[in-house]
Length: 165
Image (tube, rainbow, N blue to C red; front, side):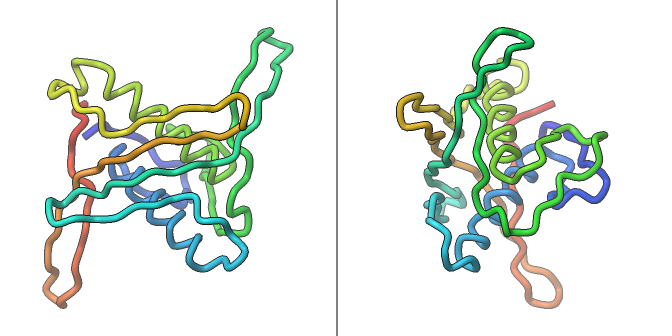
């Protein structure tokens, strides 16, 4: 698994990229269920092959950065009332909103999956696009996971490795 550093006090405490993405997806899904005025933008399901699959759309914006004279795409806040703490700036990911944090996780996964050294199997488990006309991020997910039973009867699901360090 690709090692990442959580910021101190960060909501997503995973130290592996796949685990951090797993936590973010579940946090957003739970938020969509809890916050009644939210629009469900994440559609995910788990199957008997132990894969979480799905798709998502998140609102975005196109911003002109005068300092470097280029445009950049950013995620606009979604589920802004859902508790989220990015942690201190020592973490690998530094976005201060949940939406941008998730997009940064996706971009990092794509960077790693496009490298032969970190994805020798050539899997394309995540995709991400930005529609400049609609100002929407969209993408797909196929994340393998494992299931184990704890001594107290709880079921524990964990993201499985597909990117190597």
